[in-house]
Amino acid sequence: VQLQASGGGWVQPGGSLRLSCAASGFAFNRTYMRWVRQPPGQETEFVASMSSVGNAYYQDAVKGRFTISRDNAKNMLYLQMNSLKSEDTAVYYCATDSVRGRGTLVTVSS
Image 1 (spheres, helix red, strand yellow):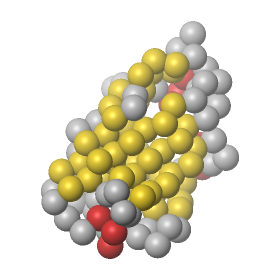
Image 2: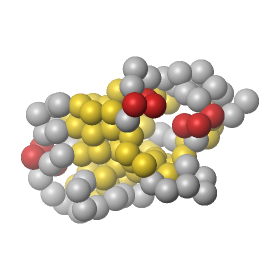
Image 3: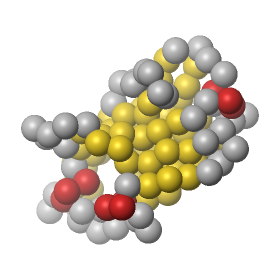
Image 4: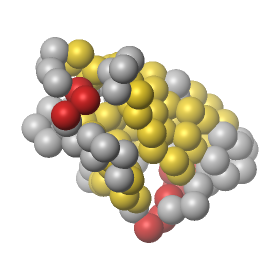
């Protein structure tokens, strides 16, 4: 199983970023996928998840700002992040139930 997140970077508050996750080595189209994040000095927390058929769930703090999506034909998971806040600063990871890939750092700061 390989999961590689990308698309992070620095953005000002109110800005947007789109994260991508390339998946390989397993049946992505049948796998429940999630985004988690780890803010500096804090524990890892759930951000959003999506079932194999597209049912999405979000942490309350990101509802209405973040959108999770997937392309099963391309084995890709996405996270569109809008109206970013400083508290969204974290390393973001895509994950299955048992595997967390390499993360991508998102920094929201003026």
